[in-house]
Image (cartoon, rainbow, N blue to C red; front, side):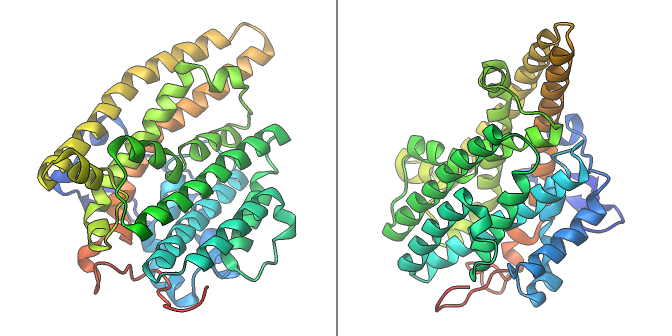
Length: 361
C-alpha cells in the first residue's frame, strides 16, 4: 500500500507500507493533515533538544528529523496555537528520550540510577521551577516542558495533568520491574498497564490546551466523550505494539500485547500478530461509531448560551483531533527511523540512543 506523505522533508514522498501493517481504512477514511506551523516546529524542537542536552549534537544532526517526533504531534493537535503545539512537541520529544533512557537503564542493569531518576521526575513534575537547572538533562527537560504546559489553562487542568503523569511514571517503574525480572504480564494486566505507559490520558488532556478550553469533568467523563478518546489511544498503543514487535523481540522485551498473547494465551507468533491486528481494526470501526455519538453530544452542549456554544466548539475540536491521531500515528510508524530495526547494525540497540554502559546521562 502506498500513499503520499510529507515525512521529514518539504517534498512529499511515497511511503510503502508493508502489507502486514497496512490499514486501507486509515488511508481512505482518515486523511492526513499537518499543522501549518510544522516546518518551524521541527526546527525549534531540534534546537530545544540541543539546548537541553537531551541528545548529542551528532545524534540530533543524524537522527532527529528522521525520527519524525514533530510530525507525530503536528498531525495530531491541529488548530492548536503555535506556542501550544511547540510546548507539546518538545514534551513529546522529551518523552521519547525518557523512554529510551528507561530502556537503557534496564538493558545495562542500573536499578539505582532508575530509582533516582524516577523520584526526581516526580519532584520536577510537582515543582518544575525548582528543577529547571538540574544537572540531569532528563529532569531539567521535564521541568521546562511542564512549566510551559502549565501556562495555557487554569491550575485545575495543571493538577490533573500532573496527577495523570505521576501515574505514568509509576507505571514505567512497574515495567522496569517486569523487564528486570523477566515477567511477562497477562493480557489483562498488560492492557491496564499499557494505558499508563502509553500515557493515554496525558495525550487526551493535551487536546484541551490545543482547543484553548478546559473541559469540565461532566464532559470529559461522559461516555460519549471518553469512549472515542480511549479508542483513539488504544488504536495508537496496539498499532505501536504491532509495528514494534520485531524491535522488542530483538531487545528481549516483555511488554508488548503480542508477547503477552504468546506467553499466556498459547498463541503462535503469527496468531498473536493476527489477534493484535484484529484489535486494531476493531478500534477503528468502534471509533467511527463513537465519533458520531461524540459529535451529537457536542451538539447537545450548545444550549444557545455563549458558554454552551464555546463548550460545544471545544468538544468538536477535541473529537476532530482524536480522529487525526489515527492517521498521524499510522504514518509516523512508517516514516520514523524509530522502528526500522532491519537497518540497524544491532537490532537490539537503536542507533539514536546514548548506549553508554556506565553512569547516567
